[in-house]
Image 1 (cartoon, one colour):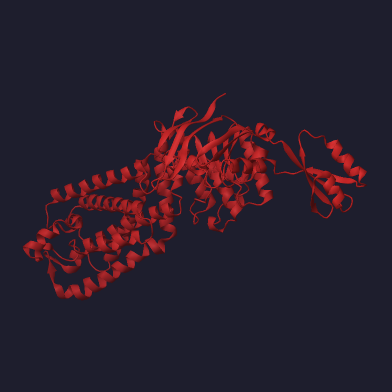
Image 2: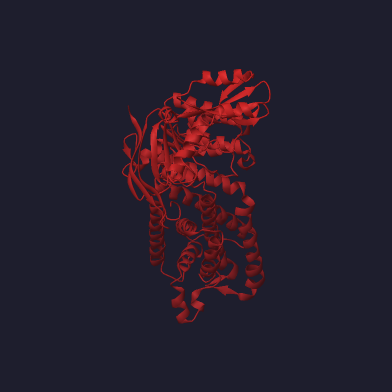
Length: 255
Length: 307
């Protein structure tokens, strides 16, 4: 077993232990929030909305809500874990070690992926109490959720690297992430919007992720799947390179 | 003799313009315990930070056991263990996890990592605390935990940045024994400390850094030779009068003790003779322990700073 692989595995084990140890902060809140969404938007309001994209409203929003939980959890895990390590200086344990920068990044991303996918699974299981889930293409579901989780883990890493105080890690989720998610087609099909707003919606990357994920379940999407995958993979590559560069130069980490 | 650390013209200028290191040259031989002394803000921690890859140097060269820090950073990192000045572990983790995980970051397989963790936690008397939350450990325990963590990758070069700050004398002495033990096993140790007695006790060679420059790099023996005066404390059988103090040029220390600076050129017999003639008995005598400290303060003051 290579020494780098052992390092990544150790970092992942540390992250998983942390996520499980503080499960009431990491796994429980999205379960409660999403249950409320299912009850209020799905059952109470959804029953009056009727169909959306050819499906009952509850079936339509389940993939979007699962994806929303995955995005929030992946980002939140990375930003809190990495900024916490930076703030308390125990990130130095990694910086002095011979782990290559890409391996440090891979370890942290794996941890966030674990939390994102765990939360996604929990929310999916909760949704079974409210509706029957159909699966159109399991590979599209899995690939989209994994890639999306990686994108937002990397985004969280960049946020944490530049953050100097706890306020700095709250600004992006509040003012950027939440609007992007709510306007990313979780609750509606963009075909309901006027032409102009449809075009504006297309600059929101979350739209591509939610629609591809929804296609995996329902077989319907507002956008072309090839374009969606291209955009998601481009985000993985660009944010991945930026994160590696931050570690390489020690931006926010080394004076 | 093999060179453990070779630093050549190392410069560090921070973004705010502060020049922390102004072209430092330093060589540390393999297998020795080397003392690095200097007042606060002298540049010690910056230099250690650069060696440990926590601070980016502005220019200069650093080689650890012949490997260049910039062209072979992974190899250099794998040879170093660092005990920093400030606590830098996750306070919510258990000591056993902190130490074993550090081994993992250095590529030590889990099974072996746990064996080493047990070994070093036991050596540093922390094994019974292995499953406690680290936040609850005492200051001395936290410091020993950082030493165990730094040792778990079995480094060739161990850097201890004020390892005994804030620990009681008993633990300090047990840590000295541990440092001597690992040095005997072949680990090179660089020690920064404010306890000059510690440097005198453990180290053979010493560098004094001030204002980002090495102002002295020699053996402790040579350094102490430069002291031309030694201070002795004499405990007398009764309270000394002014006549005796004047005759000796001594200072009244407390009830029956006097403190006296004796130039190296002067024979101690004459001191005893004067005391005897004045009708006093010397019940005990000792050398004042802070010889190095006096020298250090003088050196820093001569360099225009405050120790």
